[in-house]
Image (cartoon, helix red, strand yellow):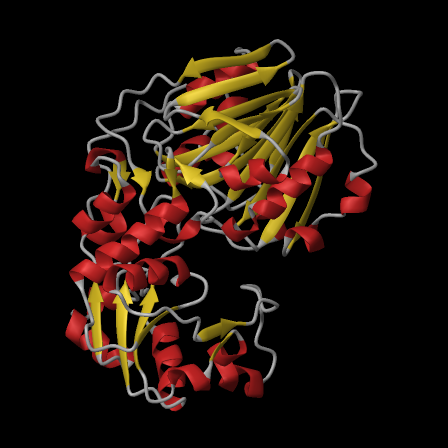
Length: 457
């Protein structure tokens, strides 16, 4: 999972600080690295990239001094390729026709086949990312204008891609024909924006124009916005349902649906599907289960308490440096409030169980604080299958719900009961037709029958 952001000023105003702020708002989508690429007044391309969080990877004070009307940015959570700085995006390339930069959210499922094909024809890859395949596909069509080479390259890709691209000083947005990952357009005065989520547009004071449609390429230049369709016919769309469950920020809107409202509705569905009438209170696993736990409390008539406190100054990039710190484990990030949990029958809500390790540890912590009973409720169906479209979930052998039935998993994590919602509950809470959503991580129903065209260019 990654985040992309781009900006183009039609009147030449500088946009680099806006792109920096946009990435800051999308930090939840990736913490391994961050990068920005821009076009200077002499039409040359420049980049700043680094490992870690946005404020560590990028120098805001230096970016503020640079005047450019076109820039894109990326925050990375690796799904293809490791955390080496060579894999940080945007990726850039140039030839006699000009320069191109690409920031990518998603996962190209036929990347290995394309890479082998390209290497057999002389391509030399400099990163381990699937994104670089796109640059080489374009480079192998030197007889075409940049935009035509881009469109023809995109039609050969399969899987998930939401892209922010610079082509010779023009900003381009592109979304795969199946619509796996979100991508939206925004506007503030003379600046047009591309963003993975609407929350980043809110931060820079932009209004949402619309979503980029599945299979659409939007070219943004001084003449305005121009839409082009990728010539690929698809059987249905596959918008990721897990964006609503966990990945998107709750203040974002996806496909016209408030993520906050969906998570609240998931909690209501869970209260109906898996009530716990003898419980004294409801609490949520911070922050992934907080909104669903509020919905569960409303739907069940039980009081809601924020009984587990998260240390907000410990991020996902935290590294355990000593044995003492390793022993403390999850307690460094989460801590129950004994005064709320002692002698209580508690319903703990979370969005999902992946390996089960964190759930096991937090339940043990709550029990050590004197809780009488702990009933775990999950606001999504069991995650039984890995994702191949941009979420770095483990293989099936590592997924707890794939290895154990619910009773076995309940015993492993140490809960007095464990229940989930169903796929039907999830689809109802999101409010979109099943034919528009991807639920493969819950059902194993991956995209099939969408065979790639011939590789010949």
